[in-house]
Length: 448
Image 1 (tube, rainbow, N blue to C red):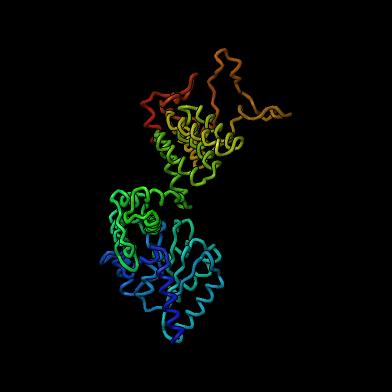
Image 2: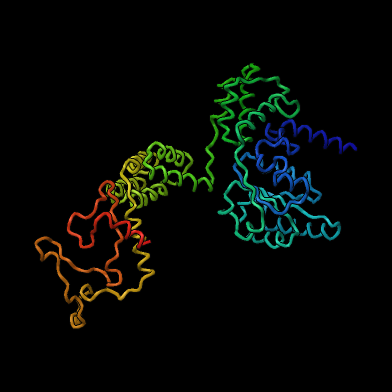
């Protein structure tokens, strides 16, 4: 009896000392902040939880959106045994032990098992494969939580046997309700300290939380501590600013792809300010500067191309500066290239031309290199007819002669079609295949 009282007292003290986000963790579905599309009345995830009919699921969303909270609520609502593991510390051995207990439990009690695997993306392919047969046979119901895109981080077989639920960043109004509850609720929130908060401080905390309820509550708790330490019963804007100052930028593997996509599309869209914003975001988050430089070199030919061929020179120079100068100084070289490429005229005529040429190479038969273009420098080549009929352009006063340079099967095909943007305006000398602009649409259709 004494041991039970001691354990209960220890648990109460630990709960009182827990961070605000932990103390305020929802006890029922209606207390969850946001996620109405999943947890509103009649919505799919809520229905499955309340009816205890949940099959294996992956909860995917940014930090602080309720993945672990939902898992705990599942634990309280299900008749199945609930086994929590963290993929950060667990391994195949731990999974096997859970599976063994699940098998014994099912045989002895007829009771199923839910395995909650937090940070499931941390499991490698071998570890995920160890889960697969037990998920497939229904011995365990997997509830996985991940901040990373599961299409990148989870194996296709495991993903195909699970239902994917995507959690969204907590919306502004839901965060307001949550913060206001944190300020007044006794026992769990900050209500015991009789604190109030200035409206602009509250709005600032909500806005800077970026949909992360856990981070927002942590910042609110720090701001409250600063106000109490200063002998004030009201949290001011300065307290909120100070509490938010040390937050690290969130930038996971999934956002890596999304941010670089936004970066490239901003440059392609000729928006230097947006491109600089995404550049700064990547650099501030510790993105590899060489990766950024490589993408700029690719873009210089893919999206700027012949409209301004100096773009490739500038991008290459920035890439060399990253290697030669290094960060942080090379940030300026990258920014220089970003602004130049964003402001440059754009054409993808080279990209389209190469794609069309590849299509002909792969889809059209070829009789090979015409005889007049074949190498005639080795002994005996001329007896094979190599080089016969070749006309040397430098022998002509104009420097150009009419001559076929392709196999007859593709001799009339046109690949490069100038866009007219910037310097992508067509050849500066005679060109036997140049046609009127009105012919381009017909040829483009034929090429497609």
